Image 1 (cartoon, rainbow, N blue to C red):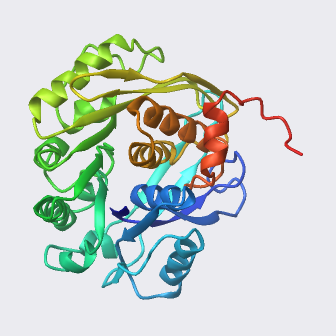
Image 2: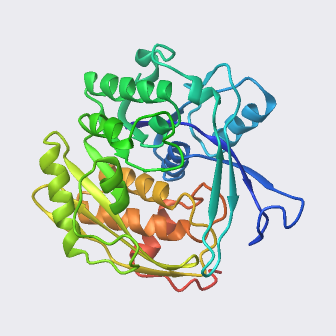
Image 3: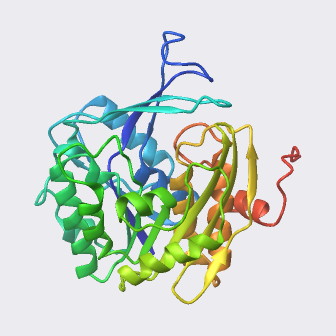
Length: 341
C-alpha cells in the first residue's frame, strides 16, 4: 500500500551537544517536520511512502528533497512555490532544563499554499493511506483551508486517513482556536493519534488526567478514548501515547489503543539518558501505520509503534533511523544495548 503524508518540512538548526543557543557560535543543520518524519520511518520499514509539501525553488530546498530521497521516500509529489523554507531552532534540554523549540515559519512556501494549489487526482494516485497532523493547519489560515481540503479529497476517494492531533500552542496565531479547526478535520479521520494534551486542546474533550504530574493512570485513558470515539462515530480507533516525564532525559513511555470494542495497553519502557526526543511522536505514528498494515493483531501493531518510538529517543535528528529488525528485537525483549558482533 502506498502511504502519502502531507505537511511542512523545515530546516532544523540545533545547538551542538547539550549547549544552549549560541553558547558556541554554531548551529547543526538538518531537516525535519512531523509528516516527513513519518514518511522516512515508513520508507525505512520498506513501505511505499510518498511525501507531499510545497517548497521554494532554491538550493536549500533541493538538498532537503535529496535527503528525503536518500531514505527512499517518493518525492515526486513535492511542489515548488513562492515563499521560503520554514526553520525551527532547537535547544536540547537535560535533567531539569527542558528542551526549547523556536519556530520561524511565517511566509514559508507551505504556509502560503492554499486550496487549489494541489491537484489531488495526481497527489492521491495509487494512494491507499493518507497521513496529516494538527501542525499543518496551525501554521496559517490558508494552510488550514488546504488541510481541510486534503482530508475531504482523501475521503472522497475512499482513502484511509490518519491524523496525529499534535497541538502546538506557539503556532495557532491567526485568530482561531485549535479546536475550531481540528474538530472539523476529525470528522474525516479514521485513525487518530494523540497524547492527552492533544485531545484536550485540539478537540476540547477532557478526562480526569493531570498532564503535568509525571505519573499516568492508564485506566483514565480508556474513558478519554471512549469520549473521542463517541464524539466522532466515523473514527475507527484512537491511539494515545503515555509519557511520564521524570526529567528532560528520563521518561517513561507507553501507549494505549482504543477501537471502540477493545482497549489495548502496551509494554512500558523506562527511557533514561535521552539523546533526542524530538520526533518521538512521529516515530510512534510511523510505527503504528506500519503495524496496522503488517500485523494481524492490533496489540502487535501498538507494541511495534511504542518500541519504534522508544528507539527514536536514542537517535539524533528528527528522523528515526531504524529498521523493522531493530524494532522487533526490542519488541522481543532485547533492550540491553549490548554490542552486536
